[in-house]
Length: 234
Length: 254
Image (tube, rainbow over all chains, first blue to last red; front, side, top):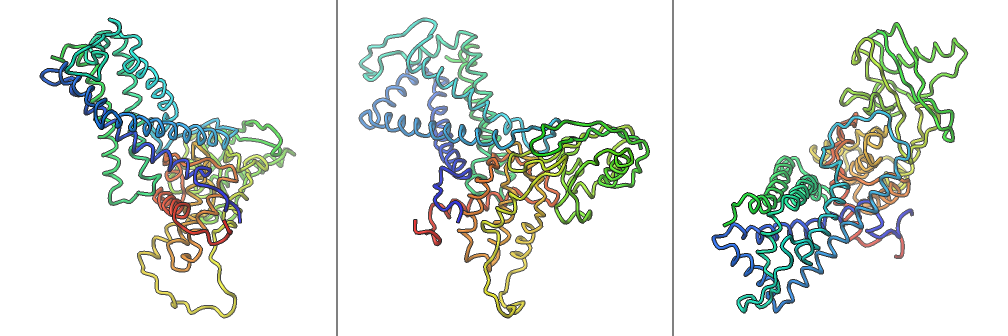
């Protein structure tokens, strides 16, 4: 019979399941990343942020950060692979488009998933180049040689604050979070549907929870560059 | 009523096709959309021109034969209504109406507004059935089915296979159709024997036909004249993932 030899990643549902499963990892990362970054609003932010950064590199004798990085890279690649293959397939499924087409139920978020995904990918590359590889920090690289933070070679706090005093950099970060918020709104609603969880008993809650999650994550991240820019960070 | 029609005309699957504009001056507001097209065709035939081809059968909204995208909506702007049950009173005097065929690679245009939906038949053929032994008919109430299960199976079984879900889907995906056909049998005791082979084979056939994948826009659910819910797609995903991950293959040696 047809399709017996198909493996999960070859099927449309399998590709979406891979995207949904990787999205759970990525959403979990966002929660942790935001939680750590909000230390910028602590009473002594320089100490809090640098101690946290030092701890990330120290945790599990420095092994955990590499395990987390490997899992995240795998999740990102799986998510992008799923998106690319399914988008190519979906574009090919309608070679002649409509002259007139009205949308009834789809949202701005659902229709912009691919573009949001591309924008977020570009942002991740920029963000890594900026704060992980220290390119484009306005005051230049801030070396740090402090026995209190043996795993840090740079002053993470200072890199952040110098960067976010530049309105251009703040603009990039805020814009990226708007894309992220839209992407998360559809994604956080959609991944349970893809994995088979949909029921009238909780579907309304699921929609509200997705909106709340997307809102909290994007607003939370936006607060950091804006907080520095407008002098709310102590 | 006076209306202006922009109708898609295409001689064959190979023809490029384009819109053709017609004006009708005395359309009754009580006529159905298809009766209005009949009126257009009568006029075309009188002029010795080729009438507009479109599919239709029962004209009672239950067979699934008719289907066209009217002003950007599959089956027209009225919810839970097939094109044949749409009436001209839904439109205003002097309106312009754009009529296009279902657009999908898996639904090639045969002529004008008529598309080849045999891809749906092949999806059904891949597993949308229950195998039974021939012989004397089983007793009608031999297998007791709870009312709520029977009702839910019936909700999925109301799919008439018109293809509006594919037409409305931004990805031209037939997941709503496939999920309804997978699930109305999968809900019932008689459908359990082939349940996991069914979902795997029907989804494989869906993919092989060149339909797109579901990205949870929900356009299909809104366009469906029978109100088939997205929940069926979630249920199919559940069965499919279980079939692929956990179930032993009962058909091939693999």
